[in-house]
Length: 156
Image 1 (cartoon, helix red, strand yellow):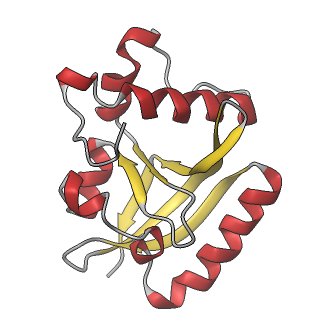
Image 2 (cartoon, helix red, strand yellow):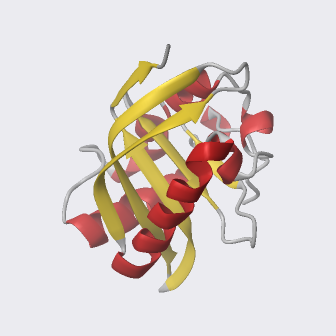
């Protein structure tokens, strides 16, 4: 399924990507991302009370998923977010630290407790705390990376 397909009831809120996100998270951390039945996984993740985003494996990775909380926080539509190179979610000074983080995740599988500054489409800066970042796998193949966080605050 293309990342251009907007999550909706008709496609079970991108159930395909929700399964990859949740299965990979559980396999690497031993924890459930959500506690729900598989039939409602797509909808539950899309409307979850925390941020979840993922990107693909391109040389310059592009976001391919964002739940509603992420779209609201980054002040973007689905089309805008899934056209964005993931490095552009961080300001220029933060990008080197972001690259170091992603390399560590690639090597270890996941990390907990990531902290950093991100920026919305309109230029609002926010500080994320205690993010989990993990590798995504589908049928044993590396298909991207994802991040989840529950805590953020505006940067003045």
